[in-house]
Length: 277
Image (cartoon, rainbow, N blue to C red; front, side, top):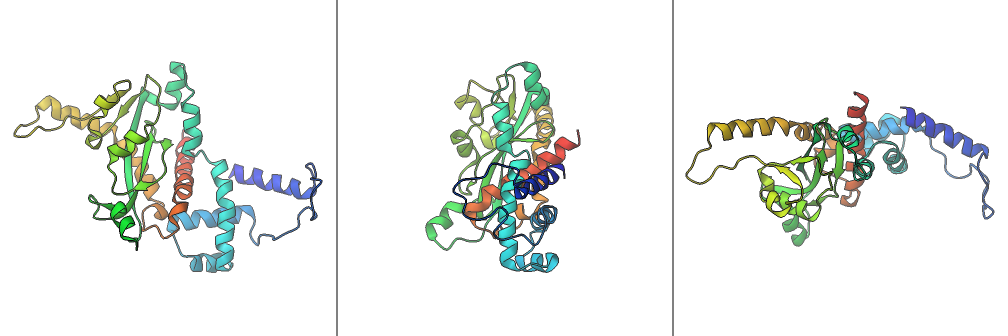
């Protein structure tokens, strides 16, 4: 990929001494531990690990490295990838500054945004308090949640840090509402019931809820069907993220690294979608 090649050229220039020298430098330029793999192969290793979620033992066998080197190399390359791919934090900084309708329509085609949460299973915590906090009544297992806001093309515009699986989708949204331009309509499902009342200043679209001992009319059913068709954008984006098995299998890594992993996967999904247009 182009950004990896550019980084490799930059590192070559740095080793050549084409940048200002620090006066307090104690070692010569280029000293220290060297990588056995070049940047391209380290990036390939990260993609294979995220896509298949293999163990470090298998990754070490495939790339002829020790397990400790696998862990160390991926930690180094993760920060580089996050700085190169269009992660949601970068997209959100741009969309918050949109003013004209032309600028808004560029990032929100059809002036629509779609918001939803997705859950990811984690190992059963040993601590009882953490077990109760992460237990999801919907999934019947211990999970973490992330909230996504995507546009009509499926590009992830906003993503929050992971939350405990016990929390309701709307409770997460109320405490972390993404800012959207006034022209944009936010499309929700029934899990966000009450958003129109609590956020009257924003445009919201909700499906019709069936009342007790009553049936939905034909027009209301057609409206709900059209609403569900529109929301397929966010469902397809979640599906693209889940194709990376590190986001669908039980998360074996440290939970403090979850946001970093979800940022990289979101950025790769955004890169693939944006490169297809």
